[in-house]
Structure formats: C-alpha cells, structure tokens
Image (cartoon, rainbow, N blue to C red; front, side, top):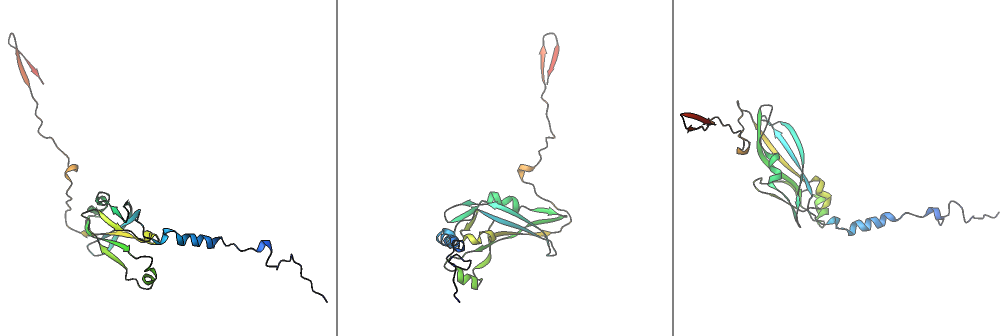
Length: 195
C-alpha cells in the first residue's frame, strides 16, 4: 500500500492561503519608536467641582473641561479661565465657598514606569493655589485622561445669605435728576423757558 501526499492539500503549511499576518508586529515597532513614552504637555484637563454641605455630605458634583495653554515642558491654566468655576454659589439656601483645590497628577518617567506599577507612591493629590495661573507639568500620554483638578466647596448654613456683587454688576440708580431751566427775557416783558 502506497501513500501519496497531494502537494496542494489543505494541511500543507506552504499553501498561499495560510500565510501569517505579521502587520501587527510592524505596528508595535512603530508605536515603540514614537514619542508615546516621552512626557508631553496636556491639552485639556477636567475640573471636578465637589460641594460638601455643613453635615459633611457630598450634595453635588459638576465636571468641567478646561483648555490649557501649551508650552514646551508644561501647560498653563489661566486664572481667568478657572475663576468662573471657583466662585461662591448658593444651592438650596446654603452658600458654598471654595475650601481647597487639589490636582491629581502622575509624575513618572517611562524608565520608572515598572517601579511605579508595583508601588503607587508616585501618585498623590497635591494642593494648588488658585491665586495665580496654574502650571501643570508634562506627563506620559497614557496618563493624560486621568489627570484631574478637584475643587472642594464647603457649605455654610446661616439665616440670611448675602452675596457681595462685583462693582461691575451693581445696578446704578439715578434718583436725583436735575432739570436745568434757562429763562430769557424778551423785549416787552415776555419770558421763555428752555428746558
């Protein structure tokens, strides 16, 4: 009994239809060579506004996206863009004013990434000042979506709430209006009033 193998059989490994797709290897090489593992400045950052009532319960949370001004090694969040979100607010007869602002930033280099993954010591919430423009250091692009700014507002419950309006928003009332009247005498004892 002779067994013959057909060179065009389905089990032959050298068949033209059974070639392996190796394009994913080239894609991986391209990704490793690109600047994906170098720190880059952030384009935007999320701002989480968290409102805590006098009983220390979280009553509201709002998320805002802020566009950053990009520089070579860092990004800047101008105070002018941040200030509208940090103003005192009144909700349900409770006045909420800014208590603390923190940033969640992961400052780790690509070389130290394996050590970071085994211990989370490099991650922290850092207090930031809201009196000047906020400078945010560059980070690895894989961490850009999770870098956030947190603003905590503390509520105070008092009987009456007085919110001081900026001078540009004050209403001007002109209660004293003065009319000027000019009287001129004409020939023959006639007078005229000009208002």
